View (cartoon, rainbow, N blue to C red):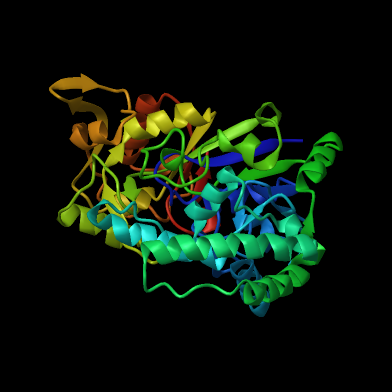
Length: 425
């Protein structure tokens, strides 16, 4: 039985949710292994549009086990709100498992993130203000960390929370004299209530996944954000706080990467980025606005407008190599259909030298001047095409150029949001 991973290769928002939805029918288990409610997937299912944040995309399908694994940071209120929103729309929440090792986001995480981000001024990273980074920081620091399993040990949880809140109040009051101290007893009561509602779902997901593998169940690992936002391998410090490349699968789930049979790298037919940080192919002109409008490039979770530009083969190729993909899925090809010409960045010029290596330092990436390969546009509506052979020759040439520059085959092409608007080689 196949074990498949779907990973974004750019700065996130590559339409991974659609690919996961398409592949879910072929798998028994769908696993979300990193990030928090800062990530979002838009999935079309049964003629309806669903915007998912913490819940795996497989939640829309009956008979699929959905796992929120160890590497995810959980805001319990956001989690429960998302579950409620689905049930109110008639979605039956089937087998849903939440790791007892997953770390918990508290009000002080969001307060701390807001204070620190504001203090950076023009150097702000551009976070979603949902406490994701500060929760991960406490996870690594250990002394202020609280995990899902801790919520079910009342004495331990209450003492731990009391100690943590006292220290956080001191820190936040020092940074912002107007900060109103948090009340640990109130937070304890609130989160104990959340824990009771989530109790049927919380378990040792690592043990479950190992047993599922041994029994021959097929698994689908669902990435969040994109490889260029990886905390270790992305455009630091303008990154997320977890390993959002394929490198994060083992860390976030406990399943060894050698168990994965197929790694699919998902890319947009162009480039987008949200928040701060350099983006060499960004188009601050009418073409960039056109791509944003045609692609409805606004954040699933935040609604923030995304920065748009031409496809960057240097950055995306780096993401593909780091994640170890087997093939590519090119999404939103139809967004470029009205343009007279399309461009692909095939190299950078940095300090007068041409390179196809992706810089390790954000300052060097900020200096990078894109070197473009220009191709003719196809100037026709392709949303009704259902076979790759029926695409205009210009669109096919564009796909071939991406495959050549990234050095991995394109096996999936999407020309619209619906399931049937997806072509497989």
